[in-house]
Length: 80
Image (cartoon, rainbow, N blue to C red):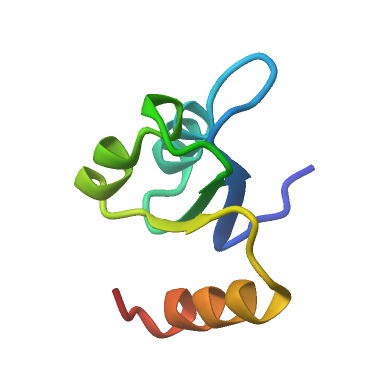
């Protein structure tokens, strides 16, 4: 609809693709977008290695509202 955004928050495991796929698509459109991914999986489905390599922000589920707010604050401030 022509509106922009500065941040993507997505689960890693989605029904028809991955959060990494969505992140890659978004970053092609707007490279400065900050990416926060989350997952409840502890195995390879969580893709921790790829998330780390790409320098995305990550939260392990379950997480609290305070955890989410703290991570978003880090993203906004650029702290890794």
